[in-house]
Length: 248
Image (cartoon, rainbow, N blue to C red; front, side):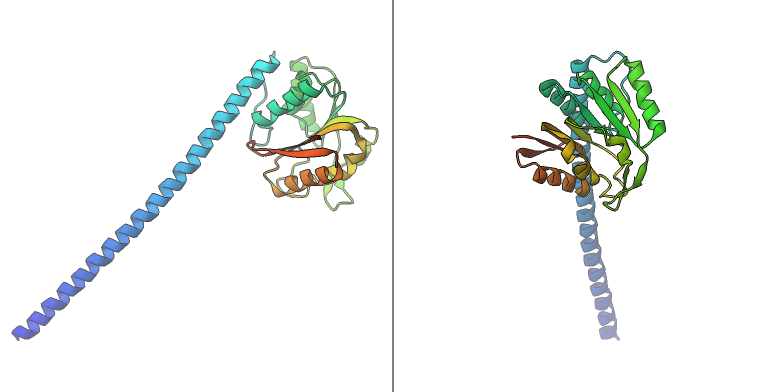
């Protein structure tokens, strides 16, 4: 009887020891997982804070450089980010393009015009948004900008792209900005730009492509660079990624 009790107590002790060991292992595993999640969240937060600082820094420089006389529309998200806008302003001021063609109107249209571009033609697929951009330009008393509305139509490339009738008269483009049509749903949405504009560029043309952190826009940038052997492709580590294809 005593032996049986001893065995029983020993079994209970072993069970308790196993439970304690299992709980310790589980506790350690949970702590490790929590620590990893905290580390990942901290890293993500630091990246977001750093990005916000960089965008604030670029916006401050832009405001100082261009001396806006009216409120500037919101940037980032679906609109151009300040780092891209500052790059556009610098390119215009440095190279003095006679004709700038932009795919996708908005705050970038204002910046390019304010930076001193002689003639800006902006193509937009939305009549509503085109009117908003025109209103912004009026508020800033900006001239020399023409906004054309081009509905999206089936393109030979297999995607919906701007009605090509709207761009037939364009030639000798010194600065081409590709930030449309919307490419969030179709990664190939902007690919027709190379075929449609390559023959319309001046020899000294510069091509700027937004959103090259996305595969489709990166592919478009590389396609432009390949078609222009006397140009060089530079990728800027901007918030959304910016490609600049410029003469060597």
